[in-house]
Amino acid sequence: MSASLPSEGIEHAPTYAAVTQAICDIPLRRRFGQGWRAGFAVALLLALLLMFGIGWLLVRGVGIWGLNIPVAWAFAIADYVWWIAIGMGGTFISAALLLVRQEWRSSLNRYAETMTVFAVSVSGLFPILHLGRPWFFYWLFPYPDIMNVWPQWRSSLEWDFFAILAYLIVSILYWYIGMIPDFASLRDRAASRTRARVYGFLALGWRGEARHWQRFEKLSLILAGLAVPLVFSVHSMVALDFSEGLVPGWHSTIFPPFFVAGALFSGFAMVLALGIPMRRYLRLEAFITSRHLENMAKMMLATGLVVDYSYCSEIFTAFYSMDRYELAMTLNRMGGAYAWVFWGTILCNVLQIQLLWLARIRRSPAVLFIISVGVLIGMWLERFMLIVTSLYRDYVPSSWGMFYPTVWDIAFLAGSVGLFFVLFLTFVRVGPVISMFELRRAVCSPAEAAQREPQPS
Image 1 (cartoon, rainbow, N blue to C red):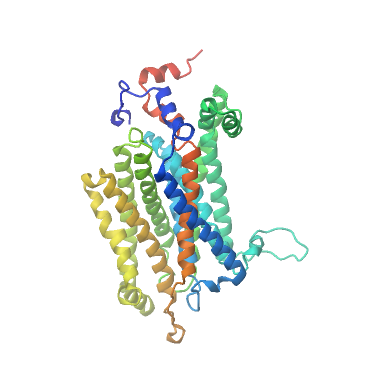
Image 2 (cartoon, rainbow, N blue to C red; image 1 turned 45 degrees about the vertical axis):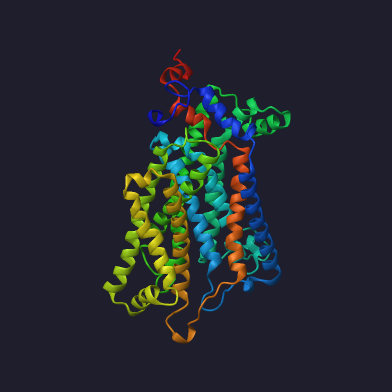
């Protein structure tokens, strides 16, 4: 990585001090201009719209959405699957690449972990709001009570509750533990006493001693070892929400690996969609280089091809089996009332990502940004297609019915995006957006690295 990192006036490779100063200056000394304020204002307005929508839903119930029979699942569950999938890519970049010792992750892992925590937090709202009586969401948890009422363990909502809870806890721990050395760097360079105290509290007394680093490395590896299996288990659990149902388009054994690949696909797209404008606005081109963008584009292409194979497998299975219901559902997706959703998914998730075979495209930040945003749109359309087109025409024609989203469906989707960006932009303003201690190891000169390493006694 050091070979591809611009020195920007520093001979051969940046020093420890130069890397630390460049990252610390972002939350401590940089003046965020009108661009950041405008983005934060828009995100805050959307987040307030979500809060108002949640209040209105508590008053009026889920009838404010376009839900009906047979389409009892729609936007809320599509939003839930979309957001929790986005969080998977951040964990994979950080934890899996740590376990295989890929140093290029050091410029991406911090904001990818941040994306994970905030995306999973937003996703957890939708299953609760979809309960109908969300104030009783704690009934999902097995707690002792005098009525001896226990959760319904066969319910997919019960699976989701524990899957999200486990993943969120491990993600927050992994994210926070990794920031402790960087909080100490911010503490030591903070100009005001208040900031120094806040960062000092978050640093938990870190002094960079050998025993601190030893325990830190062990804990990081343990949490990474827990996080990687959770990426596969959590989204496989989400897939079982669908594949356990005897509904054409859902009852498929390919769903768990298909959902995992789709989660990584959309997660990598979000990492690019966030990283490309951030590196330009914060002038981080020296740290998030074209090599990082190209590697992420390759990973997005690889997972996208797995998703494309899954689409082909579904269509092939429907025609090969000649099951009349599966075949009717597949043909209806292609030419029915929601055909625009199907072809929009194909355009975004199949056709446009083939551009990533070209090295010029992979090295163009503007084109990569457009493709990654298109993938995010396509993956949401895929979830909408998967849910609605499998429900609105069931086995019995007398039960068929169209789904029409209401303004509140749109408001909850837009508001969830706003809430995510409020959290992310706030973190960019006050936190270490890049892992300083990992970046120092990756890009410092060999001579300085040798001096910094503890010598054997």
